[in-house]
Length: 100
Image 1 (cartoon, rainbow, N blue to C red):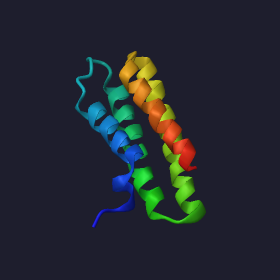
Image 2: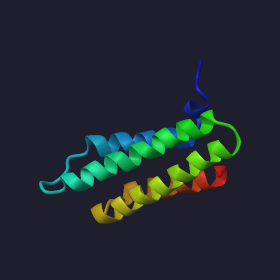
Image 3: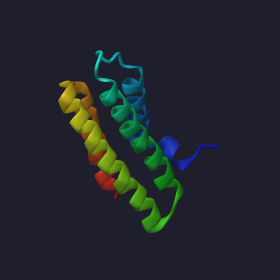
C-alpha cells in the first residue's frame, strides 16, 4: 500500500531537496545554516505527508505550513547562491500553492 503523499511529484521533489541539503558539504562556520536548512526542508516533506493524510481544512493547513517552510528553503538557497536549489524550491512552492 502506498500512502497518498508518496505518489505526488511535489513530495518526491521536496524529498530530493531535503536529502540534497542533508548530504551537502557545508563550509566551516555554517553549521547554523545547515541545521536550519535540514529542519526547513524536512518540515516541507513532513507537512506534505501529513497534509495529504488529513481531510479538509486540517490538510490544507499543513500544506500552508509546507509552503512557508519551502519559502525558507528558497531564502537559504539565496544565502548559498545555489541556483539549482532555488529553482527546485520555487517549483515546490508553485505546486503547493496549487494544492492549497
